[in-house]
Each structure stands twice: as structure tokens, then as C-alpha cells.
Image (cartoon, rainbow, N blue to C red; front, side, top):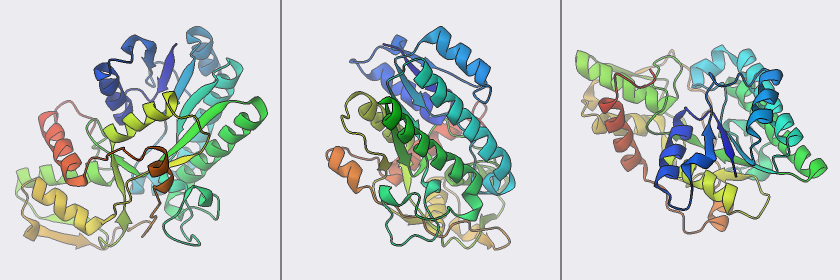
Length: 314
């Protein structure tokens, strides 16, 4: 039984591979981890050739044109176009080549920026438009959730959508321009510590965010793919929330950087101030699952980054 993993060389893909290697019930040879060099997922011809050749039984679709707040603001048109094409091509070929079951990765960016209540749950994802800073990426992920439902209803497929909050961990993209907040902060503290220079936190530090360690999400992907018997789209979070200011101070301390050297750059956008979601459904499905605490996950990520600085994505 072959499982294809798109985005297999990204952060979650590499964490997934590590977990599979350690799992005695899974055979690493049953998984094919794809990168953009194996197939351009925006090209329907290449995607069809891939499915025709591999004939997978399962799919884990992680691939996306993704980035942090400032990339989302800068490239919203391209991000929407690339992600809609990738998602539609993968779904169309999965259905055509009889892939009955799969996991499709969404994002908490899909949720409305003016919701009727907090925390938001799975029923609210289409309640109103996403935050303007995330419209390109957010709408592309919403469309994939709709198409998964369409294929499930029309063709009786089992295409499950998971909605992780902000992911972080080893193998992340630490690029100073296009990264998400945690890898960006880790890299900037690393450089500022080397230069013995002051640090500017972007924005006011007031926005609130939720985070999940990439290994935790990878474990849950496998659980939902091979164990879960339901059909619910599920938010992946542990309900903890932290401000960007608190996060910055925490990473500063774990990086052994002097917090007294931190100031605010108020010319930078805060983005969405709050997008709190509720992990109650996940807790019902897997009540015993234990998430890695943020300090422990950050400590592991910082250590990995420092040990792999020359080779990591940056």
C-alpha cells in the first residue's frame, strides 16, 4: 500500500519521515516523499504522469506556496494562483486514479478575521472573509476544503482536511524575508547575538497566536490517515495562546539574548490581531494525545537551527 507525500522535503514532510522510520508498524518503503523537483504540481500533465506511474493508495498533501505575514502581503495573487492549481490538480488526479483516502493540510489562515465568536471552531471557517493580509493563501486553502467535500459527496471518497495552527520546528524555512514568525525570530536572534546588536520586534507585539510543534502534527497526520473512522475536518491545536511580545521574549531567553536590547518597529504590520481557534473536536477524537509544550518545542528547534545553520533553509 503506497502513500504519496507531496511537499515531502518540507518541514512537516521531513518530520513525518523521521516518525515513520521509528514506527515499527509502518514500512518506510511504503511511503514516497515528493519534492518540487519530482513534479510541478501546478502542471496537470506532470501530476497525471506522476499518479499514473506511482498508482498510490493514499495521499498526504502538504505541498503549498507558503510564507509568513510579509510574503502573504507581498505575493497574494501568486500564492492564490499556485495553491489553487496545485490543490485542484492533486485532487483531480487522486480521484481519477482511485485514491480512496487522503489527508489534505489546510491552515488557520482560512478563518474569518471578524468572527461571530472566539474561539472559532470548524463550523466557522466560511463565516466571512479571512484577514486581508492572508486573503490569497487563505482563500486557496478554503477552496481545497470545499473541493474535498465535493469529492467525498460525489465520488464517496475519504479526503480528510486538517487545520493546524502555526507550525514550527526543525527543517522549517528560516529565511529572514519569507519565513513564519518563529523561524524568523530564531534566525534574527542568532544573527543579532553574533553581531552584538539591538533587536527590533516587528509591530506592537500585541497579536495573539497559537502554535503546534511539527512532530506533533506529523504524528496526528498518521493517526487520522490510518486510524480515524470519521469524516470531520479537524482543527489541530492545544488551545494555548501567546502574544508575539511574549513569544519574542521567550525565544530571546532560550537563545541567550539580552531582552533589554529589544525594541519595537512600529512601521511593520501586526497582521491579524487574533485568530483563536478551538481544539475541542480533536480532544474528543484523541483525548490522550499530548502536545509538546512551546518552551520545549522552541528549545529543540533553536538547538536544531544552531547545529544545522550551514545546511538549513534560510
